[in-house]
Amino acid sequence: TSTREMSGPGLPHELQVGRFLQSRSKEVSFLTDEISKSSKSGKLASQQVPRHMRRRAVSHNPARLPRRLRTAHNSQKNKMGGEGAAVKRPTRRFRRRPSNLLAEYNRRQRSVTWLETHIWHAKRFHMTRVWGHAVPDTPTDKGWRACYRATSTKCLMWDMSYLMVVEVMGNKEAVLENMNRMTDRRTGSVFTDGPGERSAVVFRPGQFPAGVVGEVSYMWRPQVEGAGEGLMWVWVHPAFYQEVVEMMKDVMNLEPEEDCGEPDFKKVKLDDTQSSEKNIVLSKLEPKLPPPQVLTCPGLRVSLLGNNLNRLRLVGPLSSAVLRQCLVPAGVTAGTATDPSYWWAGYYSGQERRESAEESSRAWGEWSSAPPVGSGRVLGLVVRDPRVLLPAKRNTTQLDIMTEVDGDKPEDTNKDSP
Image 1 (cartoon, helix red, strand yellow):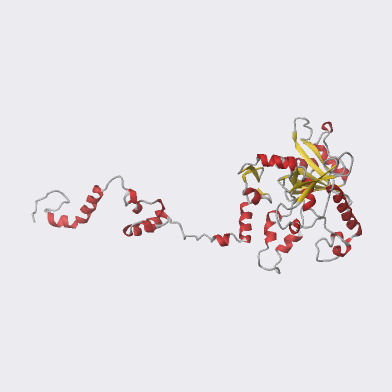
Image 2 (cartoon, rainbow, N blue to C red):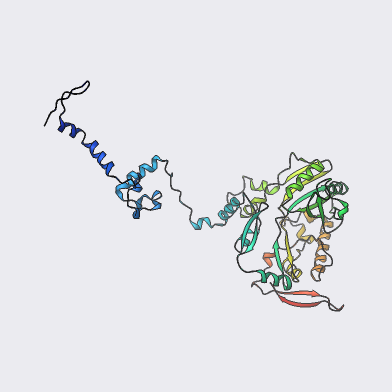
């Protein structure tokens, strides 16, 4: 051990080199390691392995690291907040249960409205989001020729349920007067009174012809027993639905109704006496269960039904035959109409309504046996559940087209079902 004389204020007179190096050996060793480290290696434990051994899933699964680095990796991850407890994904069997599927479908409809045929279309079409709805855009397979053959020789159907419905109730003269404030008689397309479905072109008040909004279709409810007011359904395209509603509020001075009441099915759903099991039917209808918004003014009542009503369009020579096979009128006789086990028991308890149902059934028989004359005809019909009447085997129903041949009796032309 060597000593050396040192002088100066605050410094020792001598320094023992051996003791000094022994006390500072750890610091010297640490400094040597830091100097010898490469500048390319990272500071995290997961970065201490060679590049060819690094895995991007190490942050989720520390077992991919060598054992000597796992403890340091876990401590570093906890310091940075960690990922919390791992959530186990439910099994496919659990997720595919009908009730869970419906709950998932309803959750996915919070930001966009699905049509009731969405699941069928989503398997066969590219879906697009327009007007707040998810509608089919283009097929995933070739379909132009098939659609052309269906429209020319068979039947083609598509879903138009994205159309929104506005229900206007009140005295017919008052309804026509207020609704025609948004039209112009010079176009010849205004709201009128009459049977069937008609169309009208809506303009912004006082801005004809530049302030055109769009074309809407409407129909009147037939006069029924005990209904002293007229009821009109207006079908509006969702692209300008909100604009039409705002115009109606301004023109008619509509105000929200204070107490709209609660529908019967909503009360049944919230009844505590019911079973705790999930109701699949109510789950399917959940997006349409909330009661519609109701606006009122003196003499008028407007209900914004939205897309609660489904609308399908059929095109092709076999359209009437398809409807004739699918829609079979239900027998509303005196015995079934008074049986409380049937849902229509209360509605058809009166003699006049039962006679109206029988008359509609006779009209449907005449309509479905021959091509209808004119356009825009509307027929209200109570039919049996088509699912009960499905054939045992597909494509076995023979459909026929009723045509007139030189003024003789109608000729049956047998066609295979589409």
